[in-house]
Length: 277
Image (cartoon, rainbow, N blue to C red; front, side):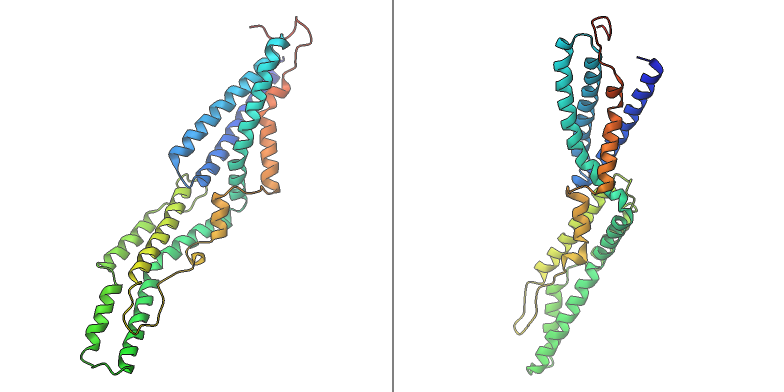
């Protein structure tokens, strides 16, 4: 082989392999909801297997003995195809994220903002329940002297202890999260934590609001999931789905470039050509 052209082919393969692995890594971060250990472990395993398979593909194709080289070459091709196919799932996911960067960034920012309003929404819910309960007591001719104590009793039941400090800590925690950046490896994990926090805080308030006093005609505190987060955008970030045209083209192009070195190698035509051990 021409060493210059072979070097160029190898360079293209290495660069394409690195690009493919980086995009797949980020896609796995979203797929596994920011689980760094799982992502890194699978990524390293996949990268190592694919690299070794590519090396054996090229080495076996250039080997002079087909009887010895062809079985290894075919086995390596099968393994490489499997790894590339599996890797193309997170790869296309991240390409889709980049292609809809503004949509996903806005979704994450809006979600964090909505989560930050849960405490104030519950406070508004509590105030409304207290007002309705007071109205019920007055309309049913309870003694005026007893009404304040009953209202305060319901308020204590509905309001968590140290509610102001709890709310402050939550707001500070939300502010401490990294700014939204698709290329930040913590973004997927932070988004997942924000969603879990919103669901957990809503559940805590639902449980606290589950006690009703006699005469109350109301419901549990609840927020529609669409208020907490854009569920469609969240699913797109963490759920494998059919790739769009751009993602599919990018995947096929990257895989083709990864195989550049293999395509460049010419299979020996006789026993005097090809590589020796």
